[in-house]
Image 1 (cartoon, rainbow, N blue to C red):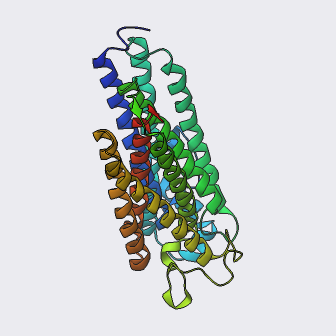
Image 2 (image 1 turned 135 degrees about the vertical axis):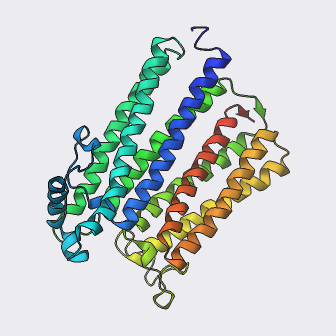
Image 3 (image 1 turned 45 degrees about the horizontal axis):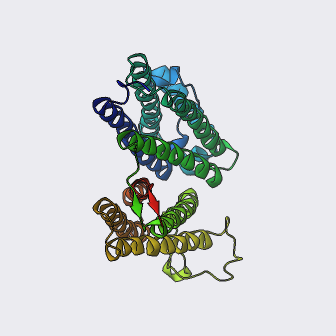
Length: 342
């Protein structure tokens, strides 16, 4: 193993690069959530990874792009009569979303090549990070697979299951990049005697959060933020009539309730982690990680309720981004617990 690659200075440099990439993925999630909730994700009907870097640069190009949008059901059913200025308001968020994805590819690939050629990167990491670059490109293809479902006749939005696939592809990439960054920064696990049970509780909380986030993708996919209606018992936290056989993937009230139920169970487990970390007198890094997760889950609950009741898209996007922060916090806690034993 190269002494240059494993030096503290180079480890820190590589870790900073990977943390930057993880931050960019987090921003990408926010951009994607915004384009989804505003419906702008369907405004660009072509997928061109190279030429698509440039936006329309002439009146003729804008007219062509707008004409393509006018051919789909979202325009015909929701935006009939929209002018070019209105179309541009839809176009730019989706354009920047795609541009940010291309920028992330460059931020991964170019430093990877530089670090590999200069010996600053451990050889075992090169194929792994190269695989992540390929998976990032695949994520772009999955994004187009998702968007294309919004072009079907009578469709005004993408299919929720394709949205979920795209979102969890992003979560895998984020988790992989974060875990790699933390392992580069702290390659040797600290011994954690007596914390195996706490580690398993953390793993349970992590799994429950993933389930709650899966439910959240379907809430987003059906525009659940617009569906809250106390009079019809939609989004009130109470089970709808006929639950649980009331339409797990088809009924709006059921989809929202299932997400709320999973989120509540996950929140209780994560809050228990915060309590147990201090009751067990865990090492300070573990206490800090558990406290961060507990604080974020409280914030997540507040954001979720506020977004649903207020029907404010911006709060819904923040709710989604905070969920990703919470996932990262639990992943960080699990990384600190790598050395946990009975």
